[in-house]
Amino acid sequence: MPLDKILHVEDDESIRVIVEMALVDISGFTLVACEGGNEAINQIDHFTPDLILLDAMMPGMDGLQTLIEIRKKPHCQHIPVVFMTARIQQSEKKEYLDAGAIAIIEKPFDAMSLGDRLESIYQAYLASADINKPE
Image 1: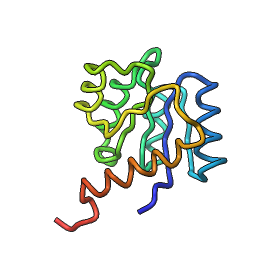
Image 2: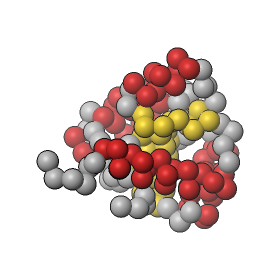
Image 3: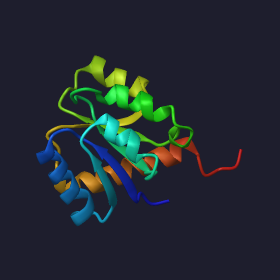
Image 4: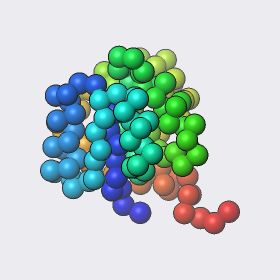
């Protein structure tokens, strides 16, 4: 299953624009961009992504709180989440992974390779999760 639909949550408009160019214009993904956790939670009722790209530090509801709220929705419990953050202390990485993230991308990131990187992360997730195998 190729990666197609991505929900991107990022409060910084300039980063949202760069990510949109990287993922839509360069990589051809379907992208819904949100500027905060509350907007993401509202959008996810209408747009079920293959992957969520989530900023860690946002005003109001941060990335971890957003992830917790998204996971409360039955149709969102197994959507892979990748955090994108400038905060990359080992303890913070562990916190994001413990919360259910499958990967962490460090800011600043390479816009030209972002789509390929997310596709690789997604395919590795599918392979490790064996979600295509019947139970």
